[in-house]
Image (tube, rainbow, N blue to C red; front, side, top):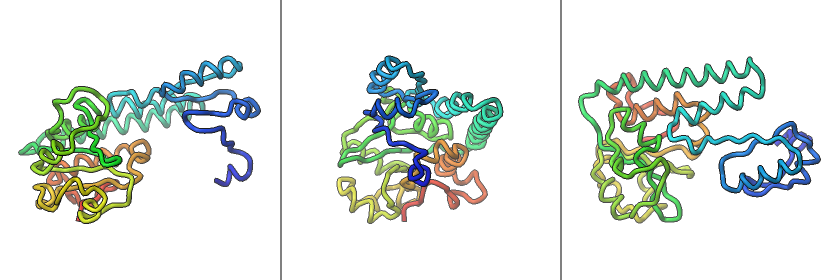
Amino acid sequence: KNRYNEGKVYDIGSSTSIDYNIVLNISPDIVFLGDWPQHDAMEEKLKELNLTVSRFYTYIEPTFLGRIEWAKFAAAFWGHNVYEKANNYFQNAWKKYMDLKRKTYGANYINAVTFSAFTSGKVYIPQGQNYYASWINDFRGNYIFSYIPGTKSQKIDTELFVEKAKNADVVIFRQFKNITTADEIMNYYPFLGNIKEWKAYKNGRFYISRPDYYIWEAKDPIGMMEDFAKMLHPEKFPNGDNDLKYYHKVK
């Protein structure tokens, strides 16, 4: 905000529509775009204006490690020292991922797990090859919807979701509100019914994300992966699931 007020940061539009005149006046060395369909048209227009464009295809990566490895690509534009820092960030995350797989592999049981998000009264779940599903399965869980093919998220019938989730050993919600209690969840999402009767809630294995969880997936991948491993197998960690960083146990 301070840099914007000082005129060092410019508002060039939105992620789907930019003001090309402002971009031209800035005269950037390079313009970074994502992988949205709208960015294809932006790239074409920017090249017509003789501006250099680079694309990030982070969101179409099917694996979590594949996504965060794009930090190395970004860092390469800032020189060798920055690239080395990004490479260390990635290597440390990869090592932690393997450590957590080994730690949870020795668990005596495999939990049935659901992971979901809610938007406008609809339930969205990761498809079976999505990186959230992979986390669950790699950390000795059984993602209940693994049979649904794909690497993205998709809407699912509410009744089917509730029927599966109420009997799951572990239930994980991600959300953008500041919700921490069962009563708040039922108030915001009445279509779920009485979640206090769900198996996971009764056994203290019902979790919900902080509203800013998605930021920390990139900023602290190690902490995020540890949260998932702890939620699936708290018995494998000294403090169990009592020191989660980006998720709360629903009260």
